[in-house]
Image 1 (spheres, one colour):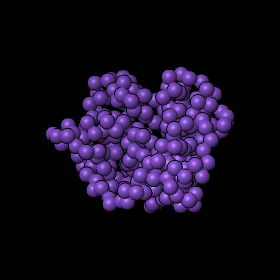
Image 2 (cartoon, helix red, strand yellow):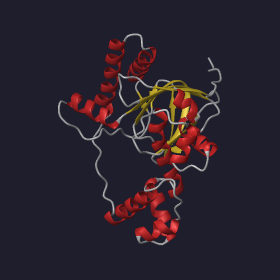
Image 3 (cartoon, one colour):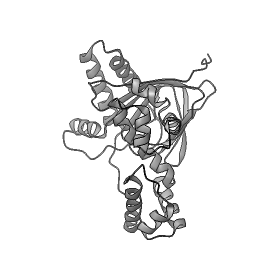
Image 4 (spheres, helix red, strand yellow):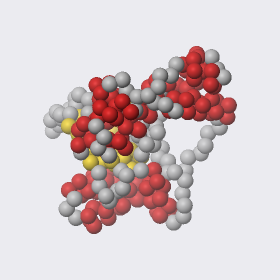
Length: 275
C-alpha cells in the first residue's frame, strides 16, 4: 500500500527526564537539510517513508523501522528518499548523558560511544526508541516514560556501540586547523578574512582554505555559521528575542539568521523557541 505524501511539519520539545536534550517529532516532504552538525548524539527512528542523507563521505537511505545514528560534530544532510517523504522521531541526546549511560551498561567508565556509519536495521530497537519517544512526548506517566527511554537507549548502546580507534594524523595540520577555528570563533560578530586565517596558521590563503575544508568538511565561512547556529540555541531557550540573538551571534540580520536556522533545524527560530 503506497504511503501518502507527508507535509513539512516539525515540533521541537524538551523533557526533564532527559536533561539538556532536544527532541523532535516531524515529517518532511519538500524540506532539505543543508550540511550541518549537532553537539549531541542524533538518534532518529524512521516511523514511515524514507530519508536519504550523506554522512562521512557516503550516501545512505533510512527506511521505516531503521535507526540512522549521527555522531556529535559530524556533518550530515537530510532529504526525502521516496516521493512521499518521511516521518521520524529524534533524540538529540547530550554527550555526557550518553557516555554516563554507556558506563552503567558496561559496569565501568567508557570512552565516548562510537557507532559504525550506516543505517541500523533492527526493528526491535526501532520500536523501543519510538515507544519511549511517544511516552516522553505524552507526559502522562513519567515513571513509565523514563524506564522506556533508559531501556531503548541502553539497548542501542549494548548492541551497537563500539570503541573508535584513533587515526594517525599530522600534528602540524591539527594545530593549524585549531588556530583557524580559534580565530573564527573568537568574535562571531566581527568580519574575518581568509588572509587573516592563513597568516595565523602560517599558510597561503589557498592552502589554508583547502586544509580547513578537508579537515572539517566545510569551508571556513560555512563552518563559522554552524558555530553561530549552535551558540544561538542557549539564548533562544532563555527567551532572548530572535532579532537580538541574530545580532549577537553575528548574522547580518534576522532574515539571514532565519534562513540558515531553518536549513539546519527544519523550523524557523521563532517556532523552535516557542516549543
